[in-house]
Image (cartoon, rainbow, N blue to C red):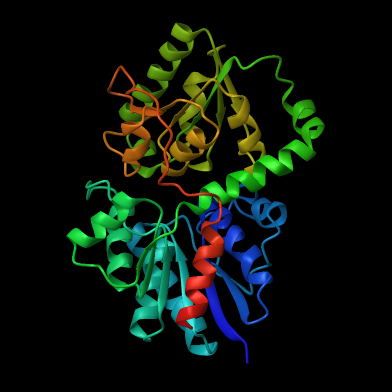
Length: 349
């Protein structure tokens, strides 16, 4: 009899990570996977296109919960997820990262005594003002199996007393990036014709976090920094607009060194990353993806959970002026993180 697992996702980075594992699960005749999409990312370009592009199984459940406060969103998701977990006979819940969808899934599963596998465990920014920090801490302490992307994340869990069933498997986003590079190589003409890049004379910039978008002064400071950065390095700023910041960019429409784009698909993002000279971002995931493409990154935050990128010279905080000496980062694995995770999950079902 097949073991039944439920995967709970709600945001773009989770779709990408889940796709990597889902491809491995599909090869295994012993597991049946059910998808729950909370709807946290609701724009078609932020959600539907990723399921189509990454060939993720169509969600059996789609809650469409979004555009409300953190507490209300998490509460609605908790109720909805709990209803599904009551209905389906499940052997495990698989969660990713640090979103409200993650926390809701962890709370619902733990109340029903369903084992939780948490992919991307142990990350800490040590900034409790970030909602993501609270989500990841609580999820880690509720999880049964913890899959860590780095050795530092394993150490973070040890400090908090979590030592059992903790595995350093590498970063599944590296698995995803290798998959994307292969896809892009096979469809180069498609991407090159859409973006018409003559040379690598641009920086790819993304801004989407709540703390960036909710404070107009902070947002303005980031864009002013990007403006000066582009002039100093004589490059354009390619800036895909997240729905959260659509209204905020109106005052910058006249800046000729900014190239505003609609939200990008995953493969489009990877293509531009591969061609960019720099990355400017407040995203956690993009800091690593920049490294996977060996592109220097500037992070619009006062700290980062991906400390390896800074220690090894591929990333710096925007308040700093210089990079460390550049070195390779072994912690992120060999591109087989998903295989290792599924093997461990199977041993625990």
